[in-house]
Length: 100
Length: 172
Length: 354
Image 1 (cartoon, rainbow over the protein chains, first blue to last red):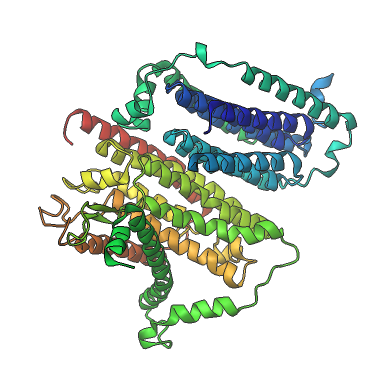
Image 2 (cartoon, chains in turn blue, purple, red):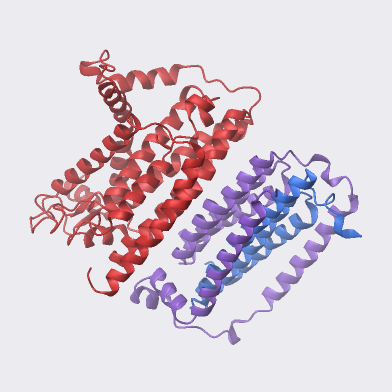
């Protein structure tokens, strides 16, 4: 029998993998993908709660998260392309103009 | 029984492909493993009776967002990030350590949930089927209880489109 | 084994479903094989040639000769390719094309001359999110081309892959918005319901604008001329399958043809009444559930065959359009038109015309 806890644990593991990716990887694109992964693990939590609490609000929220993620990716990728045009790299360690 | 087997199958696929995303150097491999994660998540959503969300998960994430990612990777012709890790050697160690602490916290939070204080809503599986299916009920919710957020989302999408067009334009 | 038990097993819905899957899969593969022959024959007719006529009577065994040739050709994997994706790409291309067919109803619910107690639906799975399923799976089809183009490590292939990803995303939008009119009229995402609702009238009449947009977008999604820019042989050699040979090349080929079949079947289901008989009034009360169950099936296949002919006809008649023209057509003409279509449909539904 699969319970709510199973889904929550899975979601926690996937979220942590996403966090590791954001902190360890240096390519802006891969970091971006890891953020998507984290968003998805939260979606899973929403849906699991929505199923086990007999409420559809969670699914409606996932709908909103999906549209926000789509908007975020569009703008984010445009920014990454711009950065690449200016600096010819997507390595976040080299994009450090804001440091000073 | 079938549900259990499918849950472990999709969960395993999701975890393995998520690990691939973090560990492989080649950006295209990363993108493809993320697609596999998204598809296994869609499978999990179907197990949770969220058919509509499962469909748009594949449609939006796997079908549109990841195609954009692949498009950008190919457009920029990104190489493997071999020596990307060289600059901050300790970062890998601290990153993973912090993540493990986070995971422990999440598990502590999960284990402290007791079902007593959670109130149950009216949308049980039978009620949804009676009201005409998952998609219909979500649609009704979007246009009644969540009308304002729904309209705001459309504004957000328009802003994103305009922003992307503006950013993508070449200055001259 | 005693006969009663056998009949019991055969009457089981699961058995029927499995049989349906095998029959549909076999039919698609068979059609793919003969579609390649048909394409060569029709193109020959259009160009005033004869076409293949050596293998068997009228060249009817040509597909088998082609198949044997493909299997026995040397399977070359160039040294400079990314092996994993190079091998996976043809498989990724063909799977979505076959998966989409699972929700298409290809005949009316039937009892097969009263053998079965309950009418069984001639559809592998009736999902309540049918159309979304089709779009979701169809949007995965692009990965085969993109990954194949990237893994080949060849600039022409890469350009083909890039083009196909941009093209597919652009046309998916107008395609999805064009279908919205159908959904508004049917009030359901399930394809079985949509076909049932077309008993009063095929949707091509009230949704003609949507139909046009959908058909053109389907041409773009299947990478057929006039939108075959991903493989444009005169500029990109062969685009994404330049580096492929033998059975892997054949699989890309099969994917293209199965995509065509699926696209035709979806167009028939959404706009041309699916298995419904006359444009208005369906089968006029004929006993299609028990006695004449094969008539809707045959009629559905006829419509699909006609659309396949149109696909081939267009390919050998129209020139390829330029890439900027393709993008302009998708974003500046079809997108506003499909929004207009939704608006008109909405107004008409509000006024109770439909």
